[in-house]
Amino acid sequence: MSILALDLGTSSVRGLVLDEHARPLPGALARRRVSLAVGADGAGTLDADVYLARLAQCLDALADGGHLDDIDLVATSAQWHSVVALGAAGTPIGPVLTWMDTRPEPAGGQRGPADPDAFHQRTGTWWHRCYWSVRLPWLRRRAGGHATGFVGLAEYALSVLLDAAPMSVSQASGTGLLDLATMGWDPEACALAGTGPAELPELAPAGWHGRLRPEYARRWPALAGARWTAPVGDGAASNVGSGCVLPERAAVTVGTSAAVRVVRPVVPGGPLPRLAPRLWRYRVDHRHIVTGAAYSSGGNLFAWANRELRLPGGEELDAALARVPIAGGAPAVNVCFGGDRPPGLTPAGSGVLRGLGFGTTSVDILAGLMRGLSELVAVDVTALESESDSPIEVVLGGGAMVASAWWRRAFAAALAPRTVWHQRNPEVGATGAALVALDRIGDAVRLVDVDRTDH
Image 1 (cartoon, rainbow, N blue to C red):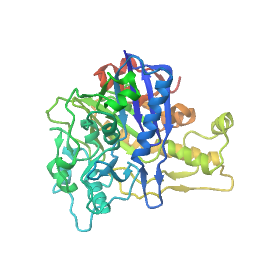
Image 2: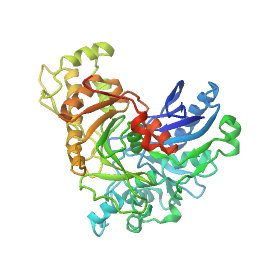
Image 3: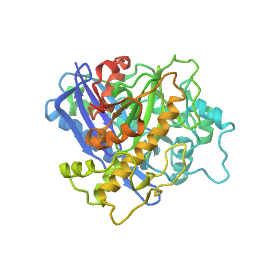
Image 4: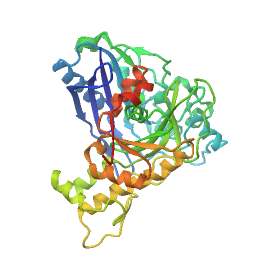
């Protein structure tokens, strides 16, 4: 049996084929970049139909290479927090808002939750521009009354391809409208959003599977009999793919953005541990929760520096970074180029570089950006440790961590004296989604191959 794993990210769509142990098969990878429209006003949007076309291109490429033969199961890791308004025909009204969009704000005079702490404990979120409780009224106003429903990007894409596309509890938890304990839509959160179940996606039961629509089964006949599972939030999938499925092991994942998270098992329908004020909480599936903090900056810091500062390339860059101190040194930075993720409200365009001099090089600035994010993450690892009964060790993962040995060392220095590991597989999200689909989350620690950063 082979598994097709899809990763519906912010900067790219990827499809790869894994074996029955969730190990990538050589050469069975297709990737298409997507264009994120960003603006000085804080916009961060995607075109839903262009995105769907890129996903189809990945499937076409894998099919042309003969990689879709023997696929029994399709698993998906998908970005959290995205939302698009739908019209009466079920087609998008306007672009998809991604996690990066900081424009939504409550209407004047609108009040938030009656008890903010109770709201935070129930939903794992805040009344914040990142979540649907603020986003849906804002989208409805912009749609001029034509919106009849709202879905995430993953649900829209899969609703076109599959016979049905309910929303997983993992994806639903990223909306901020889900009661994490009951795993149903939260009445107060829905009231704040001005919506109800009729306008929201159906929630997928545990063990749900879908099938391709006939027209797409004809396009990809090798997938005609494959079972599609409900998508897993990308952060949750990355933790599983990094082998971080126990409270004493945190995953720090740096892709386009970055996050630090801890997964723990819970009893379905049972009470959840109390949540610290500065941390969010979502669902991995019906039997696991994930707690952590996220940042608008990550690999996009390197992308910006590489584009604007004329960095040297390849080995020359590695050699130049090797001469820069891992800890300390100028410049000092604030990495909120894209604004704050919840619960912060700093707007986009708030990045700061301080301590520049005539001797400051482009590589010094890059190192300061990398160091600044590492130190920010270390603060939230300490917050996560306050919820744990034992010391936390950290696993670094994601494409940016695979690409930069210097950045891995900066993280290890910021997180000292904790043990810090490095996950060499850049496709942790797809791997984790496959393990969730196989109901093998508990096997992740054994199946994942990590190295100590000091080895």
